[in-house]
Amino acid sequence: MIMKNNDIHAAANHTFAVAKTDINREKNRNISTKSDISESKSFKKTNRNVKDVRCPAAGKCGGCDWLGRPYEKQLADKKKLVADLLKPYCRLEGIIPMETPYFYRNKVHAVFDRDRRGAVIAGTYEKNSHRVVAVEKCLIEDEKAGEIIRTIRDLCKSFQIRIYDEDSGYGLLRHVLVRAGHTSGQYLVVLVLSSPILPDKNNFIKALRKAHPEITSVVINVNDRRTSMILGEKEQVIYGKGYIEDTLCGKTFRISPKSFYQVNPVQTQKLYQKAIEYADFRGNERIVDAYCGIDTIGIVASDHVKEVIGVELNKDAVRDARVNARINCVRNISFYENDAGQLLTQMAQQKAKVDAVILDPPRSGSDEAFLSSVIQIAPAKVVYISCNPVTLARDLEYLTKRGYRAMRACAVDMFPQTAEHVEACVLLEKAGKAQPGRRGTVDRADGGMPART
Ligand code: SAH
Image 1 (cartoon, protein in one colour):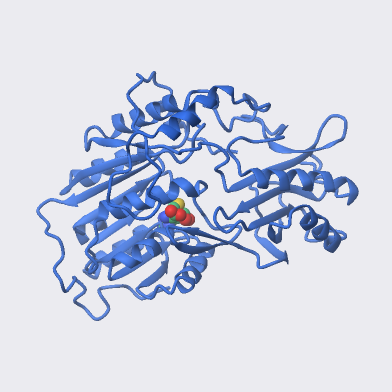
Image 2: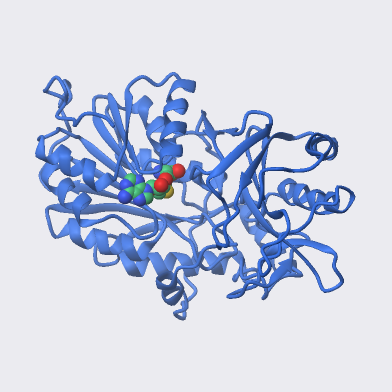
């Protein structure tokens, strides 16, 4: 269920010395400029229970490789991993832990199959194989989402829904994806089928909603290809609006089945608060939010700056981003559906003025087109949010060799119980560059921006 990354895995497998862990006091959920990396008694209490945690699928599913390892040790190990990688550039201030490090995943995927006796099972692929392991209760996934999946599994029998067979290509139901709105309590169910026709669909929805009135939308996604990709191209909304909404840092976001949305909303808020704290905006800046997804960061930052330019490659995410700006009445924002490196290159050629760049690239990190354009545009600040400290360190090497200094860095535990993922946020400043003046820096009518696509 959790994507692997060999780089991180190799690094995480080093023997770690147990360091004193920085622990967060999870009091302040709003934007704060105070450091939130400190001791917390309630966290320690939660942590004592970790030893008792058992998962029947442990060792097979491969999702939570660190389940059973004391949470304080997990944090110490992740902190050391990031601190070691960032050491040549910056001291790591600490790692922000999750107070209750369970049931956090708001996106739950289950693959459907039949066991040896022919009973329908829902779960995950066994580590490094295509065998399905039944998952009765997952300790890191949203609990209600898990219950919805088990109800669908049980309904398959009464509705005579045939389970897709990967070998023969026969059968209808392949996967179920559930997205949960952490604050809104809305649930979106995506039924991934091999054909667009779900027999007795209205009664199926009725039965499902009777068991789970919290379901606000059901979508059929058609995946008729023999592929390991979960979602196919075609979608049909069969109940509700076809998306859910959720709230982060006081802003509302629309999330479609295919848009990227951070899977741990509790920790995401802390990450964004840290990014805003590091950026220390004065209100007159023009900023770029690169790799913006549905533009959660840009919309949260929009209250603190004069203008935000969002750039994102995925067209569904850009569509959601535009809607999200409207929902939140944000008018100082514009979006480019483009490769971030390509847009920045054009901006550099047109001598666009930018005061700060926030970037949150995928695990592969940024690229030379993007980073070299940042050097040319020369914003006073760069806030780099990363889900892979290995590529973060690589990109810091590039920027710090070309006039930027890494000033502050912290890690955020976005994926407790897993060895794979640790998020980090780094503030870089252009050596010798002063804060922008009162007038801001936008001095051309078009601000040096290319035409929007
Ligand atoms: N900042 C967002 C999304 C981060 S995930 C958030 O916090 O929710 C990384 C995003 O980068 C994804 O939405 C992905 O679609 C996008 N992406 C990947 N490669 C890209 C590229 N070359 N140019 C622009 N966006 C890209």
